[in-house]
Amino acid sequence: MRFLSVLLLAGSLPVAGQSVPDLAGLVDAQLPGLVATYKDLHLHPELSHYEVHTSAFLAAELRKAGYEVTERVGKYPDDSQAYGIVGALKNGAGRTVLVRTDLDGLPIEEQTGLPYASHDRGQTLDGNNAPAMHACGHDIHITSLLGAARVLAQLKDQWHGTLILVGQPSEETIDGARAMIADHLYERFGRPDYVLGQHDDPLIPAGTAGIVSGATLASSTSVDVTLRGVGGHGARPEVTKDPIVMAAEYILEIQTIVSRQIAPQEPAVVTVGTIRGGTKRNIIPDEVKLELTTRAYSDAVRDKIVDSLQKMALGVATANGLPPDRMPIVTVSKTEVTPVTYNDLALAARLKPVFVAALGAGSVVDWHAEMGSEDFGLFGLPDSPNRIPAFFLRIGATDPGKLADSQRSGIPVPGLHSALFAPVASPTIRTGVLAMSAAVLELMKK
Image (tube, rainbow, N blue to C red):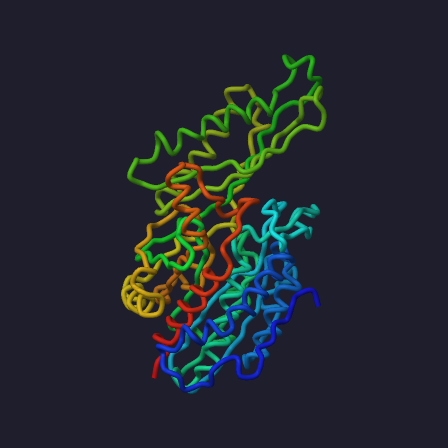
């Protein structure tokens, strides 16, 4: 077993029947063990679609806590194995609440220098072997979910209904939530009345939670562009149609989509994440492939961006004299796409005082929407006429002193997806466990 199994010692958690004000003490009693679990998870990240050991670890720990666990939940379009986890704890009649964590790491070589830094490698979807790192805090999320699972199992006399805990694979490739729903998640385990999730945030001080009402994260659309040319010798560019030069033109031109085609008050992002082309310095290649991501808060803006990406690719090719059979190929992904993550207004208003009571008034802040994206929102069935109220909480992850230094110096702290990202474990986990436990108790209270 690659992961450290942290067992709760007899008597380390108070017995059921305690009042909600004792919640902090209950969480603090297991915090050292949770931090050890987090460090072990951080040591051994697994990349999207390959969360074999991570999912098995979470499944085993949920079973120990008394949950009925189903493994390998999820159905990808290519029928490859999915590693989704569902843990259910039934406690009489009442509401059904789903709490979700993500499981996967990122293909990044860690540079934090931490004693528990990852040195593992993993396979990517394109078959490459790459370094792996929990650079987005999914190890924090798993640990927080596990801590809340144990707390809520101990406090069964204070709530009723069915608690569903989801370990979702492949968030970073934004197809894990869709895969679990495609595998009849709600038909098999029950349609929840509420959906809850959380994410660490390096721009919020550790020990603090950030609340957003309404739209909180942008939609995301993945677009692949293949610019085709006519290759040849690097010393005779005049007899070629150079796709590398076309790619440079295209990348610069699409920067005007946000600055000149989208209204300034409409948030939008267009980013080119990868460029692949060429094999040797003196060979002009036949094609260059680009991978892009777009972000928006409205379908109209999203559609405008995608339409412009297609038209500009054709324009660059036409201007360079490409024949019809060498026009660009622009592919808009049908799976790597997420809707806007929306926090239900009534649910946000209901939970805010709960978080204040659990964490303290000074530890809950009103936060702002961001251009990051998540597939968490899919669990709320956003395209259904009967949407499920959902709420996605931000958990502070950076030492307050370092954030203050950053604000004074103007040097940003390491962010999500950075090789230097290193959340402050203990207060971040404590806040996540406390907040999620309190939210579930509120929504499922007797």
